[in-house]
Image (tube, rainbow, N blue to C red; front, side):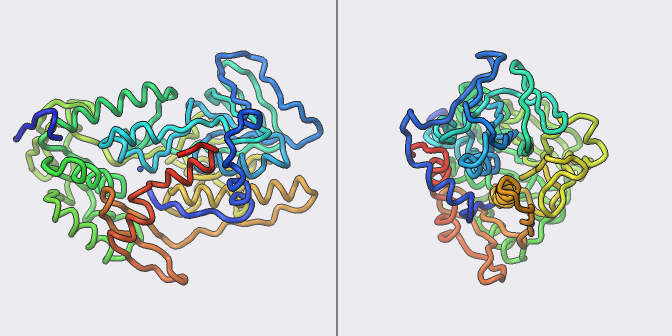
Amino acid sequence: MKKKGAGSWHDGPMTEPAGAVTAALSKSDSTDSTDSTDSIDSTDSTDIPRTGRTNMTRVTVIGGGYGGIAIAKALDDVAEVTLVEQKDTFVNHTAALRAAVDREWAERIFLPYDNLLARGRVVHGTALGVRGTTVSVAGMGDIEADHLVLATGTAYPFPAKHLESSSIIAKARIERAHTNLEQAGRVLIAGAGEVGIELAGEITSAFPATEVVMLEAGPDILHNRDYKPELREAIRFQLEQRDVEIITEDQLVALPPVDPGVLSPFRVTTKGGRRLEADMWFRAYGSAAATGFLGENYDEIRHYDGTIRVDDHLRVVDHPGVWAIGDITDVRETKRADAARAHAEVVATNIRSLIEGRAATAVYTPQPEHVVLPLGPDGGASQVLRDGVRVVVGPEETARMKGEDLLLGYIAKALGVKS
């Protein structure tokens, strides 16, 4: 196993939203502190200040991810909006894998919520439980609402997602992983889905001398998705061009005896009898919907994977006044940031209609399977929709859609931050 000196060294596409969400996000360029979000930390006080507006419909959004910020901003002009988010900054997880190999990006994925809302407020705290449309927040007590939107997303192994509430702690973990990758001669990635493939692309782009081996239990890469064969062929060809070793239809007997992202040479055995060696490893499988805080009142509508039942309008079944968007819904589609934003569009339209005395008639229709899958800044392939037909495009267009910017410009604009 080769060693190197210290000096040698996220899932799906996002598309521009439309309608109310787009209109709301287009207003977010200003960073004037006199018109910024009322941001409250759970350690400040147990008496949560209100916005001062009366006789307005109260909307609480739990979760400040892609869908959460979209719906909060879309309703900011017609409702008393409270966004509850445990992290102290927004994390652009679309760029999280790039951040693991590029120190500049490690700083750029964390953006403040301060200018998200013109009238509403952001409460930084952990949601402990839900009763009806009331949420209990650690250190802050209960926040009552007329409409509650659940947008808590999914947990996923590092480095694709960061679960730490503190951006300082998250950045320190990224820096440790980056330093370890600089010294690693061989990296094992368990899982060859979208995250594992994108991570392999980032590592081989930043550190072309590093050996990467991918281990996939399924019969092929991206095996459990409705993707065209041309997409798999294009991705596999590019990975092999980078000398990535791809092992399919095999899995580990036991996980490596070292935490992911930690530099410590190890040996493991697969169920197929292979013996693999590496300096460090990452787990690229095993997402879990973040719905545990909802409690037993949601047990009857919660599936084994943590997702919850919603109707076509994205109302939570059997829970009046409660809506759900993003990864936690049981909508039959790949969990993607652009899907969460499309959900936000539907729910924002429905809540706005109810506020204005009309019926909630907007429905959500899943789009055919599509993905933008970069392999570093200038590689990858994508399956996109063209006039309703799925087509596969190559590295150049993939880089233009996602690989170069990783949507930083769009997210910064949505949050009212200068990128």
